[in-house]
Image (spheres, helix red, strand yellow):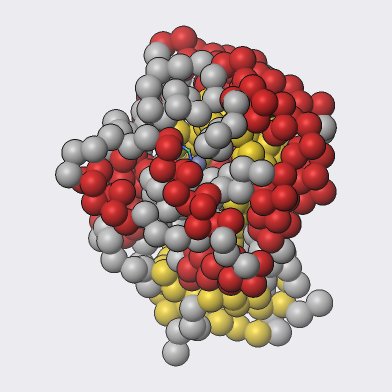
Length: 401
Ligand SMILES: N=CN[C@@H](CCC(=O)O)C(=O)O
Ligand SMILES: [Zn+2]
């Protein structure tokens, strides 16, 4: 196996449980994995040495919530929203029509282009959802295409009831033939449990069918108003509930309760339901920001994700989400980076493999064109993305020098 030493790092933020920051650091990569991390002066010899030019290093972003399988444009809807119109789930139908019309080739290229943008921004592990097909053939096609590009695919047939179909008839289809056909391509299932989308009974039906099919579960919950989504997610032992903008005390207590068997100091025990906050979406829909600070203080593990999609959040910039979480949601820079790396990995169930700069983990490492991770929030909106390594290989950006 060849070894590579990345040295002359101003700092390496590990995202481990102690939020360890190694200054004047170096990282040794052996094949696909991190073999050593510590002070540069103590670094072991390596086959290849990369001088990082006093840049900061951190784990690649783990984006645990996106909707990249789409065609068409909804900028007019966005403009109308900025002029005062409310966001409504019905906009999904506009994207569904455009996406159904796209060929496999075009759709694959669109998804690949978006994944490449995310990678260039430091995202080294990416989940995406179906949900703009809304028929057996289209959902299956979108799941298949997504599975050729991203790391994990979530089935979101329960995104919107298509026009002309009865809600119960469609829910039965999602839970029956559609689930069976997408099953080979997906790891998780999700339901948009919200007014204008799927009600509690229908959401229960979807979660039950998906669980019986052996899929991991997630819920889009409490995005547009109070509702049962978060409590349902906890009840079903879902890996995450995403959005969480409108939580009451009982919702927060339910989420906190789900983490009672978890030891945050050792990051071991029984994982609960991760609350995934989507700050770019909250800004783009002018919803109140998810209460990330309160959730952390209540003992809930949170993730930050982009929710990149054409309706509510057309950005895959995890750096933007981190900056917003720090500047607006009152997270510390360390909490925000952990939520966007380890937190995402936890939501996707891959925290043993990725999300931290720890010996034995996959060498998914991003360098910033800045001397500290604090610059992510200190210089909001600036493109600080430097070289990106995935499984030990340079996959985006240029090496310094
Ligand atoms: N909330 C549901 N689904 C997406 C938006 C979908 C759309 O409007 O196209 C979201 O996560 O925000
Ligand atoms: Zn979403």
